[in-house]
Length: 252
Image 1 (cartoon, rainbow, N blue to C red):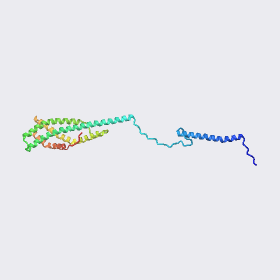
Image 2 (image 1 turned 180 degrees about the vertical axis):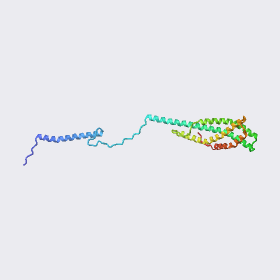
Image 3 (image 1 turned 90 degrees about the vertical axis):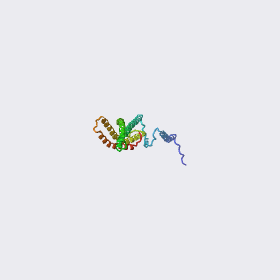
Image 4 (image 1 turned 180 degrees about the horizontal axis):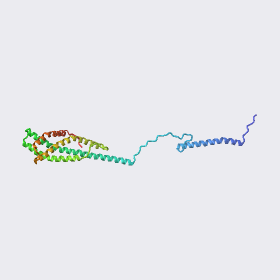
């Protein structure tokens, strides 16, 4: 019969329990610490031990620059300044075109009287009117011619004083741009009429000056001069009539 196992002395039993308990306590402590750290990491306070603290780079959100108050104010002022310049350009453009209209209107009256003056001689030579009727037309048109000359020269000077242009202007609104374009179209249509008026009125005013000098006895052989003028006049008169008949343009 084997001998019964002898019980360990109390001191040795305590040592065994210490060897078992201490590791368990340490394990529990370490576990608690790790759990606490993980909890703090989840709350965003500390990094998780044994895990990478490097987070993948994320693209920075694109931000739209907000214009400063000063830059907005400056841009507004620039826009207003451009709009003001465009409005001024339109005003000067219209003044130029309207001045040309005045020249054309004055030229129309003058050219009608000049044409009548020339036609009277033509009709008299053709036997369609009497010499007396011809002379009546001469007197009437000559008297009107003095006013024609004054009127035409006045509006022509006013036209040449205008410095406006109907070119497109940067910063102009759509409405102002369209108005400038219409005025530019009218200005282009006016040019051939203005040239024809200028040539025809130059003939008329020159003849009026000759008649005044003739009345004062300062023209040698006035009849010969007159016939030379009469033969040359239809060229410019007909050119004016053709240009005036073709004139077509938008309002400005």
